[in-house]
Image (cartoon, rainbow, N blue to C red; front, side, top):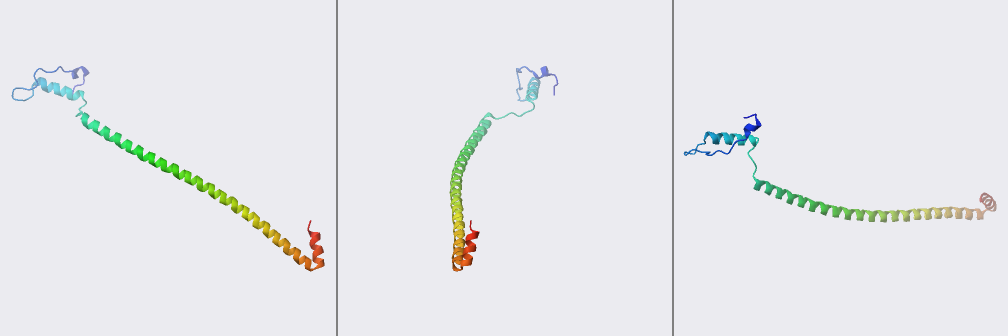
Length: 133
């Protein structure tokens, strides 16, 4: 392998092959320098590269479509969850109101029972009325 960069420049040989098909000395030197200049790379097939690029673009478009569908489903699920949360909050408020009403009813029941018992005995009635503010 040559180390001098100017040595990699090789003029196009006049004759690459002999009459019998073997390489001439100029042909060998030209091909060796060409091989060195390409970094010993075998080269690429532009048709294959274009085909792979097309496949990649199609796969990316397919992935984008799936992602868009998943996003739409996620948005629908979020809207449904918000509706369920709103409904649950409404039910909680109704339950709190019912609990408050039941507490009030229990207080009234206990108070009414106490008044009824106090009415049976005059002494208890007097004591109960004194205890009440």
